[in-house]
Length: 439
Image (tube, rainbow, N blue to C red; front, top):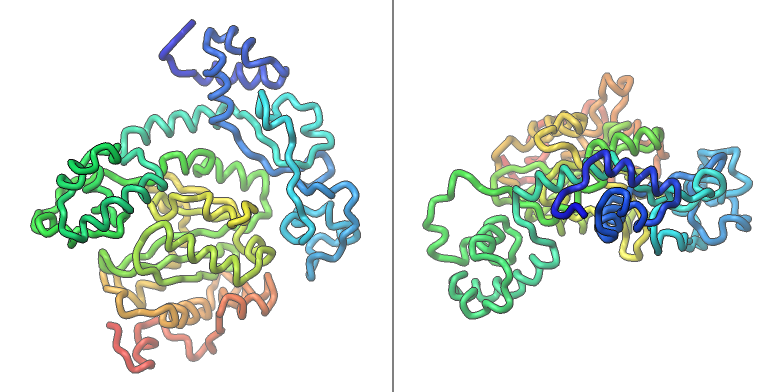
């Protein structure tokens, strides 16, 4: 039996073929000369989730999908042929208050996937778990690369360490002193603790360590990623596959705009089709601040409107987007969006968002502090930017396009106000009108 050898793409292809034939893990392991648990772990780790229906039917995982008589759930139905029966529409699960998720028992026991299920393409409209060998190979190669960069630590572990270290660091205790006195509670090295503090992931900061602030920063820093597994199944290739399977899905790009290092930052949410940009001020560039803003939008817009506007979020590899599950699901576990990541150092993959940031730099130059700005100031800036007519939109403004696509009510829900064409100002002068000079 071959031990300590990784699976190859050819072996993963064989696994997929045998799963389609409903072969057991034991027989697959015997054919490949591997242990049973190796095959089982490989399949469970590299499951690709597909929310597609079957022949002639849209995706629907509600318990009552076969006998439901609900109709007219959406005020403005975009699928007139389904208007008599909402259960045939792909938006049913997000619009109906009676919705209760249904689960297939096949996914809770070996083989855990739907590869060999005879009903997969015929009558099943539930969420499908598929083992795809090419996706498994890409996830494996990604884990190899990322295992050699950053810190292998989860978000929950960061919270536990923060609860231990921050109160003691504020008492001016050194990291060495804390590690010595709590050696049985700390499973990481001192250098990792220093990097966590330096990455602003603790409540305590470098200023709480008197000797640390006197040291010159090192030229090279290890990149930090809270959870390396967050990109598995959410890479740019996965994004392209998702768009290919769901071509009508509106795309939303998310990014962070920084000013002076260590000060406030902006979260920008860019709706690609309408070129409309939303921006929110944040006190620090961490994951929780992004989650809080998404949760606030979800509550203010209602789940139906939120999923209509933001069914797909495409971001970069910043640590502020490293908790995708908190962005994709609400507190009850209902899916509200899909999160994907661009390739490293490939900002052109969300070029529409990056180009729109040029408007922000006309108000807030690169390197300028955002400390004095409030959310009202940022919203005022965004109103002027989105009221600026674009040739790419047929000489319409992003706000006009957004209202055309989703109705005028959406502008008020997003607290957006159209500026008269002659009053549009793309300069910091709009901030001075309030009596405060932010320049």
